Image (cartoon, rainbow, N blue to C red; front, side, top):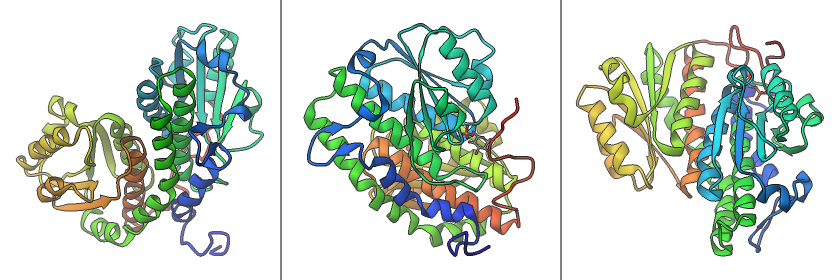
Length: 369
Ligand code: G6P
């Protein structure tokens, strides 16, 4: 009913709009405002556990796997611990190299995905310490792990994951800061800045949500397309993967996410007027690089949709359609860029008359192999 959807037409839309609150709930109690500290006592990891880690494995499925790739960028940069990310159904069958100094992080919204549970069991039997980033309290994954980081984003009903994803990224951001401090990679000033940035995130997500109408108008121009390409670089590469996954899950349009610099090795052959190309182009470290990828698309007649920052004039100039976020820092911008991609997929699916909350052939959690 409309009532259980809080007045929204679909659970997915309600959950997209819940993100400022969900993110605030993930943060609550885990940072001390005014201090440069992330509080991790609740997870039960000791300082000794954290200093003895020599490698991190992140394993997940679907959208949670994309959060894992985002996590790799953050953890490696902020802690200098090498991170490997794998899809659970691959990890479990490849005799992974795990030792007692491996920290294994499972990411699972439901805590019930069969492949992820099998990976957790395997990692534990090989001696790794296992942490699960999970949304559902008391789930199987949380019961079977040494340490649990609950995202507290509230029940997610829509099959296509939205708020679970952005809050998983926040969990990984918090862990990166905590580990970076304990391992001496981050000074107090940097930590204070990262935390202050984080405290601004819910309000910036509200700003991203205000783009809804603009995005709906873009969706009206594009919803008949047969193929979409999503491009991003660095930490926004997994965001491109997630944007493409959202669109294919709920609208049944073929969509591919690609690291923009790799486009020349394949996807560039697909580009013509019929293929919308969504580019994640916030200002920041890789801005110039992504602009040159946009030139490559434009010179082949592709329709560019840029998700950029308020100051991203060049990205806007190159694009047929553009949307601006209020950028914070390279890590948190990944979250801010996700919101327009969720809304774009949502509106396109609605315009195509698809069952947004229950797409064909998909399940909220896949409890069989
Ligand atoms: C299914 C859902 C996805 C989800 C994936 C992993 O495929 O449709 O939305 O990302 O499972 O689920 P989990 O609960 O392990 O995060």
